[in-house]
Length: 614
Image (cartoon, rainbow, N blue to C red; front, side, top):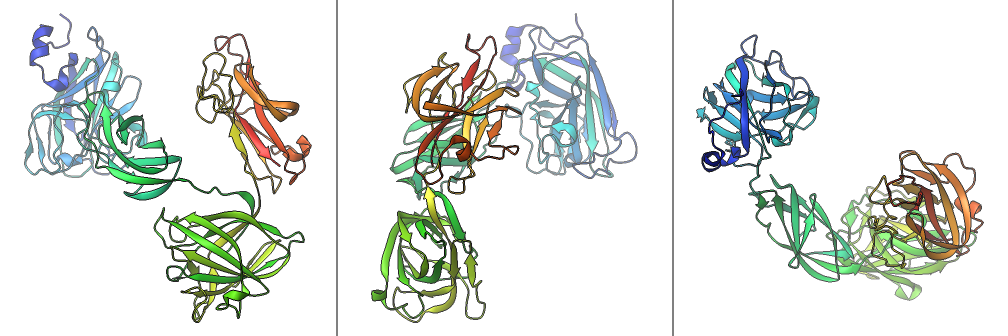
């Protein structure tokens, strides 16, 4: 008979009488000797956790020469005759034959003692006993789940590893017992290492705590990020929105929303089943929100020390010095409204200065009206409105908010910064009124905000190889769909390669950014005057018309860019387009992908596309 202990010879009996936590164990190696710990002195101590481990631990190796038939993983560690005063000082680590170190137990709470009986450690999230939150006497012998406590996995090479993910292996396994406090001593008579098949988890018992959106919040669609705090023993999650259930691998889910009120909740899932649902929350999708446009900016400050009343008014002076004037497109302002609450704003101007006309509405012209959504105090809340032109000259500006409170900086005793400027604009501090056009102005006050002007349309991604075919008709040629936002999958990246941009057309610093390609292959950045819809190697090319090869680049880590640091020319110059002309150009990057077994016989692929309006 081999040396593995077989407490129950017949598997049929074992299936009936074994404890649930160990029902997957097929045999145990009983050859692990024990001894005192620490091996010197009267207590470990000396460790400055967690970066320096205590000295003189008990180190007990065991040689495993055979594995039970059918066993694939570690299932249990049995500690016989474990005695130690004050369990909260003990850390137990299992080292596998390859040198990997794995926590079995890290400093459970309480001041009770190990009794000298047999304590069996089984994988976390199984039907073993949980460690008590506190204790003062003797911890009963029994089967307990692993406990990682406050240990951060990977610290000094010790990982928080579920033991039934450790492969069953021959060789030397080592049990190490650390004592983190002086004057506490212990001993171990012997230990066993058990092997079998992966242990079935028990379902999560605690519901996740929802984080965002806050209950009842108004949000912009169409994509709403749902987030929650992880639930103990959950390997993944299910998110229920309006009675439809969606899987989530992590503690977040991007919900494809529609305007209206939505109800959502979350529960944990593992191989043993599902846990309890969280409490439900609602949010209201108010439709797509305004997007920050690509243009020039002048920012004052977002550090308020003062504020008005609901529906109040802020004044400042604006000098437009650019010889062609500006096209004002958006502003961002500081409001004390809760995050997500909508508001609106009117923008008034008058020639010269605001001073002296704070209560004379007849002197002012309504320049623009826009809507926004609050992002919190001292955060920029975007207000979008149709572009309006301001020729060169001096203006007084008045901002009236509806449904909110404006925040600003400055008092009579602590004046604000007086001026903010760039090469196009100079903004000078002004005043505030709690009621528009009525009362004695509070001065000096500096509006907290940002003016955004001379915007161009932002670059837009298109031609996704995700199988949705929203803007073209040609599918990926060998069912090699990528993920949303990317091109068709390649041999190195199942998500597909991506083309994005940085910079802005108005400043002529747009850069094409390619990523997700095979690590070191060459690629070509393409510009087209039109569109196409055709198979292109292992991908789909949507850039057409007159094609221009902008540059050939060598990828590093599957990524490259054009223009990059070695270039002395801008994208517009290389493409022969004039900034501000309004012409449209399309861009894609095609690259080598010569893996013989991937989507033969072609040896190249292409990213998604980007459209830029110059």
